[in-house]
Image 1 (cartoon, rainbow, N blue to C red):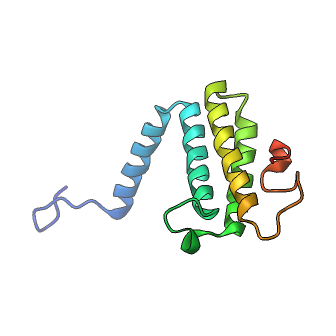
Image 2: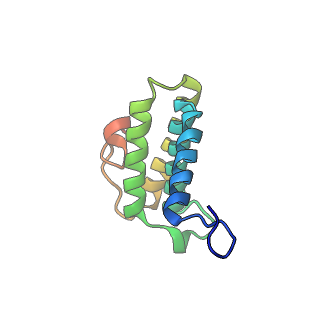
Length: 126
């Protein structure tokens, strides 16, 4: 229904509801393996930045944040591996191992072998 000024206005609530319905409809069309790998790649990318593997390592490195991201990534990959193809799991594990090793190299006081970020789920990385 047009407003008194002759234009049709959409309330913010209505616009948000339409966006949520559209997003839900869009996500319904995405395969689970895509959602899982996309989430893993986001965690992997963020972890890489936080361990200092980005453009400005001195400004972006934050090992406390990296530890959290690596732990979450390791848990996700470990839990999802049986559900996704070996091809996807293998490449995600390779990326995880890379950030785990980068974390170990960046640490002033390295964690004991087997106690670094994500090693609870992956086993020792060296």
